[in-house]
Image 1: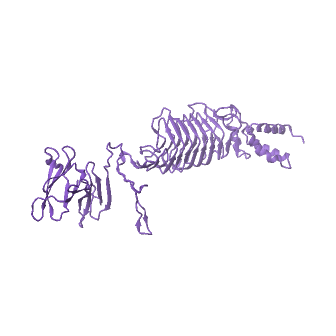
Image 2: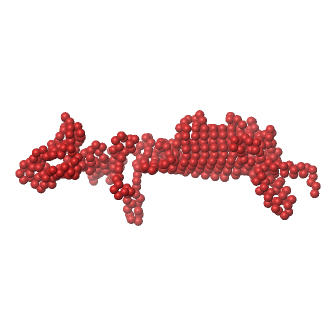
Image 3: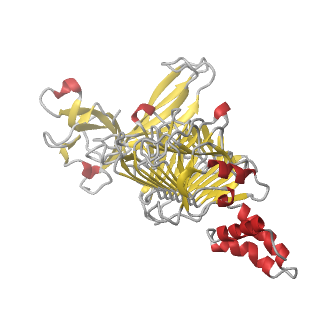
Length: 556
């Protein structure tokens, strides 16, 4: 059969254009047809269909000298192609191309960009609007080059649902990717953005939030703003991305909620403010309930994941470094490290309780116990202060036991119903534990009682190892009926202590106490370095030294 001359030329062109497509694409279409029994007719139709998906078929100029936008538009309108195939070459786009929901695929990109075997799409200098709009499900293996760092061109205005951009290079553009409304199931994978004003800009017209966004394995170099959402962002994942030499924001949204940040790298600022947040929300304290792990921020980037400051940081759980940080979005956090568990707050945040709470067991009608357990049977539970806060390391806090007051009790400051607190505090320089316990009358009036744990001393005649007596360097019976327990001048002082003396001998009683001044004139301040305890016989009233007595010293 002899073909007409024009048809023969057309068939020859179609077959020639296939040589510009990736071999795997050609092979995948033609292999089944080669095996078909009917052979020629079906094989020709397959060749024709594949060729018509190629933008060269519609007149695109791969030299870049002529405008190819009409050819791309014709290919998009064609019923033959769901995915436009763009062979290697340079294609100038002078008018916005409506892809009508079609995908577009090139041959891939070279390591350095701009190679002869890439499909490079460039905007004409007087192009008004984006190069491509209404993109299909996938845009892959293409290069978009604005040719000038001052270019304001927009490469892609994408459809916001179920879109994937893979292995593309965007360079020297005003915006690489923009979306008019919020995005859902939107994926940017293994793409590179160089010298662009915006990498991704989601304008969120109409107030629509964005969800299920995934950016994986992308690189942003010398980009002013990398990923920008004008409104809210929920459930997004940013993994293994590089943000390098960025002037503005790497990731910013009005609200960032329930997002994941894993294995990303921030390095160097390019003329922008240093110590800039790696992730930022435009509404205050609105990075909420997120997760972060293995992220790195160096040279000008602020660690919003695991840093010591919690204001304008990520609320959620971070496992960066050797710590697990559980942080609210309002300036407080719990940090768990191999060395301990620590509650943290920023200075402005005020008092935030650190609560360890046992759950309630409804089956038993009681709360589960809270147990502090040491791994060794002779281990101690120690209370100490952070050595950064005090040089002596002595615990100065209070143990507080809360009990809600009955109706009628008022807080002195705000006149609201009060919570009554039993408070116990370790004295820094004195033995024992002092406390205050508020008690409420039936009328609702609150009275505060002095409570606590005193220091105990057991004294026996001639026994220097009696419990607690070795606290006093001077421990002696002065004369009959008088026992001195004291320190040397300048060594130690008691401040207005409460003393209780009980005698073990059945016929001897305490006959009073003389206080030994800690220094000259100390009596005015009730400062003592020791005591002389007097005893007498209950029967005769004469001085007598007991065989044994007990002393309790309480320091209010």
